[in-house]
Image 1: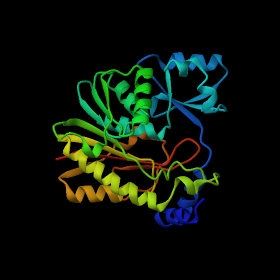
Image 2: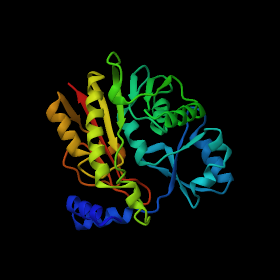
Image 3: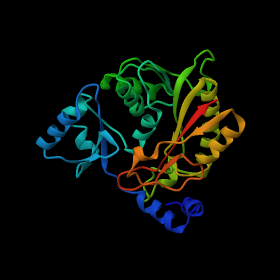
Length: 296
């Protein structure tokens, strides 16, 4: 691992917690989400049992399963995957849609949607009755997003190839999910010698600028009393709490405390902004930050 990143983590969290974080940035179990638009938890559990695949349930989300002893490549060969009955997704990335609580009839913007895990999860949570606009600025990634939406059978989802900072002004939404592009510091593998190819502090600085601009755009497109869920797969305060503090000071918005008991059992890192979540990476969870913002 980069010594500079290790030093930054220790500086932000202290030596003891910093060591836990570094230890957690390594091997991670396969986790998946049941596509309730097409199947049920019981059906998938029975199928996995018949195949001799061991799994565990997740206490805070009945649609999620932890797979033991099998890697993603093997899961991708199963008919249940090919038919879109399941979606391979990290447990941490399932948290933001649950915090957003998409409901039937709501207009929802997914500002950086590809590859579509959270988009299709929101469709499921709203019983396919929320109107979801999924933005993706990269044409190739947008095609992958369309493929996953179709494969999952998600309804009332429109894909728009556009940078979230440049969305037409007349669009407004009840709720917005911004899973912002970031440095990925919470998803790194410390055993990978090529970490320097995917992480740098220059990337952190560029990400922070992009994150602020996307959040500012989100606020402009949010209806009064509407809510934004802001998330990153970073554990660095620079991309998380510092970005939130910038937005709260500049705009007429407030932090809405996340209902922590709903996510009981998730390993958490200390935060300076009460009511936000920063997940500590371990063998089950990626490092992830989640906050809810309301427009006054």
